[in-house]
Amino acid sequence: MRNILLLEPNYKNKYPPIGLMKLATYHRMLGDNVVFYKGDLNDFILNNLYSELLLKLTSIDKNIIWQKHKNKIIQFIKTAQKDLLEEIVSLSKYDLLITNWLVYYKDYFKRKDYFKNPTWDRVCITTLFTFHWKVTIQTIEFAKKIVKDKNQIFIGGVLATVLADDLEKETGIKAHKGLLNKKGDLDKNNIIIDNLPLDYSILDEIEYKYPENNAYYGYTTRGCTRKCSFCAVWKIEPEFSEYISLKQKIKKIEKEYGDQRNLLLLDNNVLASKKFPQIIKEIKESGFIKGVKFRNPNYLDIAVKNLKKGKNDIAHINKSFEQLHYLLNRLKSDNQQNLYNLLDKYKLIHKNTATKKNILQIYPEIKDLYEQNRNKAPKLRYVDFNQGLDARYITEEKMQLLSEIPIKPLRIAFDNMAFKDKYVKAVKLAAKYEIKHLSNYLLYNEKDKPEELYQRLRINIDLAEEYNLQIYSFPMKFHPIDGKKYKNRSHLGRHWNRKFIRAIQTVLNATKGKIGKGETFFNKAFGNNLDEYFTILYMPETYILFRYFFEYSGRTKKWKNDFNKFEVSKKEELKRIIETNEFINLKTTDKSIIDFINEYYLTNRDEILKNPESDIYKEKVKYDRIVKKKDRRTQPQNK
Image (cartoon, rainbow, N blue to C red; front, side, top):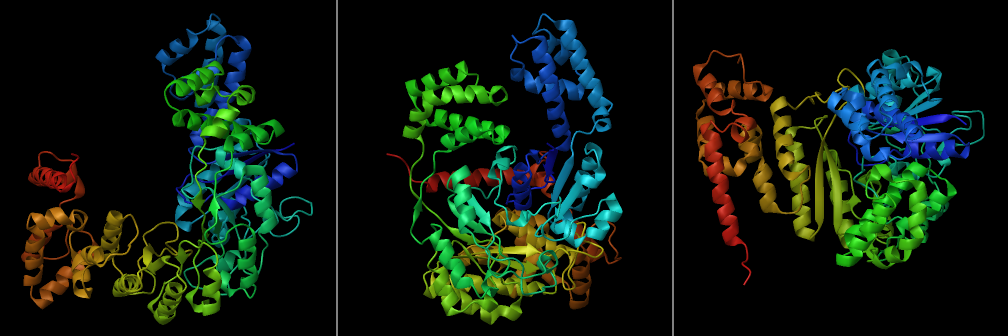
């Protein structure tokens, strides 16, 4: 049996690592010990050392529940604080033995001796966007220190495929390009890893919670028929596969982990498939028909069954503990107190003391109570082709098919004004077939001009208004997937500049990254027309961020007046300076421009929010009080 570590670098992301979930299934099929981790790598080491130390401490003194003191023990290993050592040692009469082991592991951690004794037979690392280069490299370098044989480090995913040569040059590890879709990709056997069902249990091994959960994840096609300059799909999945069956995988997942509410499909261009009608038919046969409702399965029962089978005990202990405390929070008064007492009896109040044995012991006593009180409310379920649909492939027949499944939202790409007519036609067809919730990503900062982003946003606002639709637009800044700037977010498209990029991002910060229905809101955020839009782009960042305050104080009006007073030639010079978004050491000798920049562009958000000595801070505090009083007056009063 091999020890297999699956690692996802510690970046934020919405969706679970499907590749690692398949690898977990693969290695468990082979009888390997599998661990999944995402988080601080230092904490990973500390937790492993704690697990070793726990065995030592328990063997010395079984009368102490050492798990209760996990956080203090880890903190001591990490910091060597003497007061923590004294506190832990005082728990047991075997103080000398306890001290020796605590000091041993503290020194072991400090000297990094754990790197001298690697315990992992294989480490598999997933990668995502190329601008996650730094954290990805850190993860690979960490893996090199904890694996027995560096040839058993496998790296896959987007970054690994697109930047395979750079990755090998930087780390000495050869990346796997593309999919694990051939026999013998990792070992000498006939298993095709990419065809395997996902191991959902690994998601309960970690603290990180993916925003998109309670869904079946999968593909009905692979690859794409396009080769867009901004996209890596054609490099990762060079062959277009027209149809991948879902039904049996969904049934297997349901049997092992319970029914999932939604269906999240990661196809890159499903409408290009000639078997699209068959795909829709199978989605419906899998239980995703418009109007069908979902009820949560008994998650505690599922977790306990898997514990009894010995399938990933760590994950199912975590899941069981989570469900026991979910039940505790749903109960009231005496029932809640009685359950609390029972959890206390079985040492299930704190996660650190939860054990498989105690969960299995408590389960017969509370299973009926859990079933009676768990949430059984029916919920609509949805299908999401998450990567978006290609408007160029949309026909009336395909839109009618889409309307037969509970698709929400319908994502249609609108990356270029050249596709305006096809995009508008697609949205109108959606409206015709009563698909009311739409979403799209609007790529900007590639070959487009700044005005084209405004134009696409305006088209969505107008379509939503005319056809009574909910259209959420998500402007997405383009980052190169290769070239000189793929490792960071500093790329500038040929028609863009630093200030415009920053202005768009500031507006999106206020809207949480999306632009929804509502012409009034849109006009306020981006302007009534292109002239107002460009005025906002040139506006000082704080004036955009605290829009209402600066308008209330009269500063916005004064800025506009002063900005427009400049004669044409000076205004062009001023614009060029503003576009750099650098307002220190100005490259001009014109006093009027220097004075203008100093007056309006040097105030940062910290001056407004964190400096009580500044006049603008005090003014903002007064403004906030006025707004709060106004809000209270407009709220309905209880009688």
